[in-house]
Image (cartoon, each protein chain N blue to C red):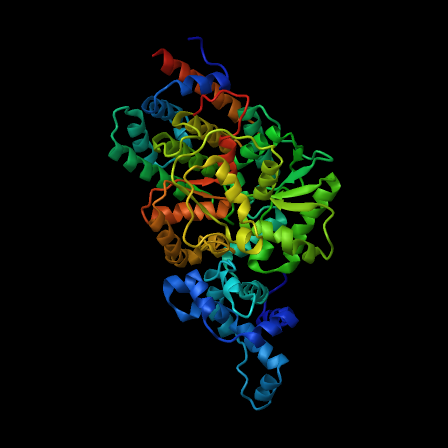
Length: 151
Length: 426
């Protein structure tokens, strides 16, 4: 397969993967933005997401941790929002997406949803600057995906 | 806001007593039905949370100054005057123990708008300096920065860039003559950026022109929540000026309950004239697009799901059928809560409660009402249409160890759009 170099190809490539493999790929995307959070729970969630043999109990426990991390990090209504902190929130949401069960028949799969949240984490971090964080994170994700598919 | 004082607080409450309020106090039959309708009373069992009791300081001022009996009692030295102690005691009832959900008003057998009176009495509490710190900070930021959460234009532009790169669509800023002007809440900008992307995708499919104003993108009106009409008016005026400058036909209020009632119903009264544009909640717009055949979806969710009606939308805005019409397009296993639509129970964090850290314990106690509704249904997914409700529902579910994902309805619809793009993300 030729290398992925845009979002359409990325979605197509991800769509061809089974859910456990999507979770593992999601974990790799999140590792690339892990420096944007200090929450140790996320690292533990990634270990479960990266394990294609993780059982339901492990996934369920990881989901609870990721959800708790996201809720702890979210910008509370009416508070003075801090975009650097918000980057950590989006990393936690990416982790949540990586281990969430597919209860709905539609909607984004774990890898694509995690990828978008990772990009948003970068965007949040760079919000007050002119840096093209989104573009650089997309490129990084294409590389991660190509490495994964070629491994 | 000028320096607060008790005297000013009492004056502000007095100014709120119009014929409507006077008739409400005169006609209250002390039946207690409003208590049963209030989730704060229902879950704590404490009589002080009876809705009509929350406006007791206002009732006393009304009786003493506007009734013969009250004046007579006053002349005999029997008046129970409102004091600083009363402000201190009632502050938590007025702000922490009321989400302005309006359920009390709906059930009142004599038609008293009790939650409307609580909204009015907040004017006095804010003027007296007895308002929660969180709401004061949010209101100050809303006036000074344009957003209660300090969101500035570059942050919105960054999100627009994010969505444009993800979707290949444009989200135009300041487009003159666009049909729709989209407002956002800070909660969406900071926590749920997928809302904006969903709007862009839906508008693209419907072939509608839309824009975001760089001068007034914020929908949240903290002035209404804290109860300071002057500030609420200024925030409404910014939106009105931007919409009229751009010449848009319709302003879309986002998935935020109180923002809708603030701009749609309180707005024209606050600025003292009708708007030159229409105001619709996003769900009303989506339902219009559906009825015109402009919203094309594919596939059905087979998960068992229910809809949490945001109070301001259903009880004050009458937006009841629209979300159900939309859900029927994409959900085959939609079930209703026992009390739904106009009688739905609040998430417990509306009316500024979520911005008031002091109220956290009470709001989680009140959330038990929602928990019991959800326990009955055993759903896989909870859908709503208010960013504030969404966060509160997530927090409440987490607190009660309930594993139910919460989804925004606009976002869910966008996931089902028939689009010319690969479905590789499914």
